[in-house]
Image (cartoon, rainbow, N blue to C red; front, side, top):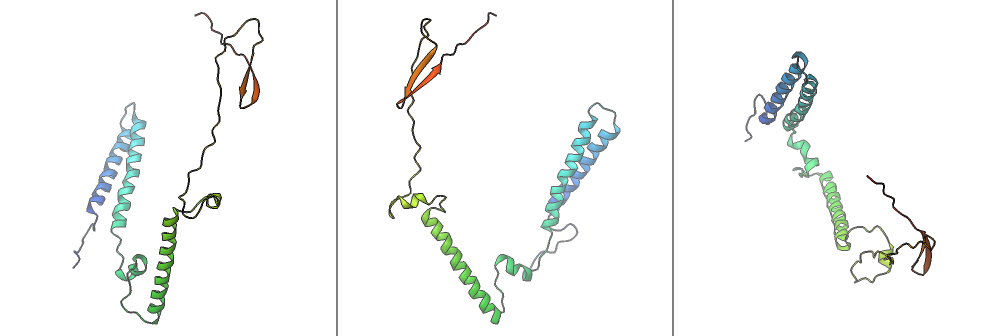
Length: 177
């Protein structure tokens, strides 16, 4: 037998927290409005925010006290109806078929590692081979330290992967401090 809830319902703690937030928020807001202090605007905003946060507790209290008869819950949570007529057989068959199809799809995703974003991975590997991670293309870069000479032009030629690239010489100027 269910306990009989009187007065405030099941979520009494949420109710009292909502009331406490409302009282504290109202007191802080009224202090900010009527007391002559230099941070009155902070108190006004803080009081309004605390009152706004009390809405969370009010929503918890209200939604915790919603009562739904078990007859209305049957379709939502999957409870089967007790009196099966002609429609009960059809709906049961449809429910079993739906369950088989969805579990088959779910199991196929588990076997294959989830849906693939590219179809090129599947064409290059055999059926028994595990999926490979995409390889990043590597680029070799040659670097050299050059000392500037006054008699040569201020450009450097660097050869990377068979291409000659001319780079201008840069200097850094410092000012005396």
